[in-house]
Length: 275
Image (tube, rainbow, N blue to C red; front, side, top):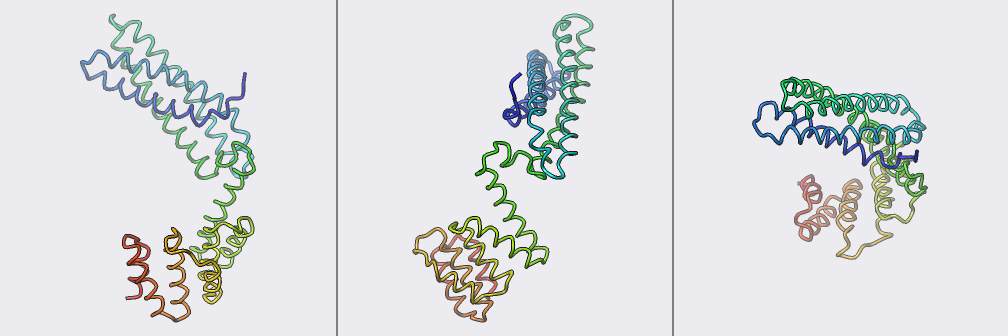
């Protein structure tokens, strides 16, 4: 059977959408007189059950790359177990829905619909649980983010993001030197990136407390008046001037920026601090 790992993110969303909507329709059908609700619920749940088989297989095919991430193995294995459990429950509920359709006009039809609805609630819980666990792998362990393709460029994007957020976290925690080292690594990897050049100047100002050096760096790449980075350049210049005791000069710069970019909230906040 072909490797379905690459399809896992797409297929699981079909399970979530089809399954939860189908279960909701089944519950509504128990109190509504609309005859179409029951068959519609059955079709959606049957489709969700079929998709869950593919989702479980694709998850098994995709788990190796995520498990290699240090610290992620247990989370991946737990997600995989719940995925298989969700598939099994959905298959049972799909069987109950088929029976409810077959016996819809007979006496056993109504009890079967209630049993299917009860099973649907259990399936809904499993769907939400496995989706939450999958989200943990993606958003807490970066499982698949930048690593699924194996493309070096994608992996580099992941590393850049990690360095950026790592530097912010270290700074917020009061670890200025650690933040500066992470920013230095960003500069080493992307020396020509304008955004990273600004991050380096910001780090020199905030982490290394070097406003003179920050002003010197800002002077090395003057920006045209219409450049989209002009506001950031001006705000950093003003911050460096304030730190070096030149508050009036900073106010002049920010006032001019506020006139050019009247809707920029960062400029307004910086100017407000000087009043």
